[in-house]
Image 1 (cartoon, one colour):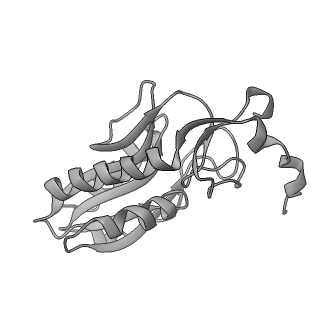
Image 2 (cartoon, helix red, strand yellow; image 1 turned 90 degrees about the horizontal axis):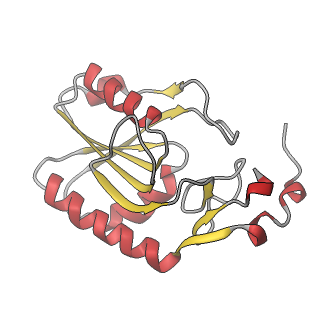
Amino acid sequence: MKLDANQYAGVAERADCLATAQDMEAALDRMAADLTARLADKDPLVLCVMTGAVIVAGLLLPRLNFQLRIDYIHASRYQGATSGGEIAWRYRPSAAIRGEHILVLDDILDEGITLEQIVRACHEDGAASVQTAVLVEKRRPHQCEADVVGIQVADRYLYGYGLDYKNYFRNAPGIYAVAETDI
């Protein structure tokens, strides 16, 4: 069922900007430098975590000036909701991972549950190595840590640069915290 987009009128106006587009571009540049140092000689397979990391991948991968291949993995806990549930595996490229150096690219490290499950799955599927990179990390305890982090922000409900609010606002030009009244 498609929701009425008008029900979200005012959400953007009430949100707090935690990181501007310029902040995010600088974060992507730092991530690219770190990933180049880690992976330039590995011929990695980059797994874009659907759907949020699509924007991250589109902005980050052109900054990586080394040989790589791209695939995707689809595991989600949110599925349009504002709180996570059980992991739902929609696509797991098991055969493609075997023997490869993997870079898991995600939009956010929130609790770390999804990233931990993806890393475990990559190891189970025979990856030679697994590195992780997230554009945004919330300042809070996590189940696992990312190897490369673009920017750290407050532990609030966020949207922008791939992160969504009820499947909207992934394209916002910065990282925004949703007002408590809208959660």
